[in-house]
Image (cartoon, rainbow, N blue to C red; front, top):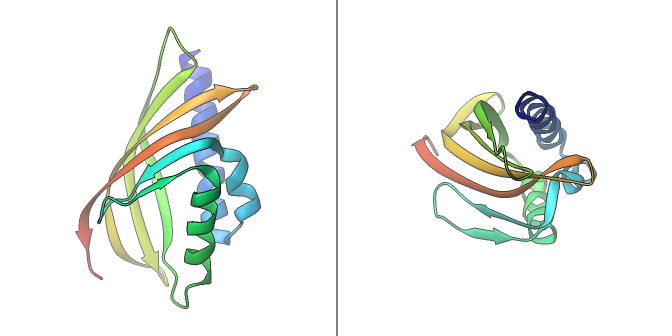
Length: 130
């Protein structure tokens, strides 16, 4: 399960990154569990639930000089006893190709119905040029 989970989560993360770059809300929704939770990196705001996250991304996508976020997984640890995994990596936010903020993140994934979805994400801002 570990190698298959690793590949599936990396593919899902790449799809999430593409959706963020393209401003594609329809592609983000299926990657989030219904009760997904995100804790943002700078102000530790808690965005709870798929619907709330989609609303937050919709606002982000509408910004004049919107930030495009990219998450890059460093490692994925799959549980040998439950259909869950943790992704650890680095994130960055860019405006017009220039990195404005970056840091570390962790995401908890769950396999549900044959696909992996994000249950929780927590971000740490380490650099901000905003």
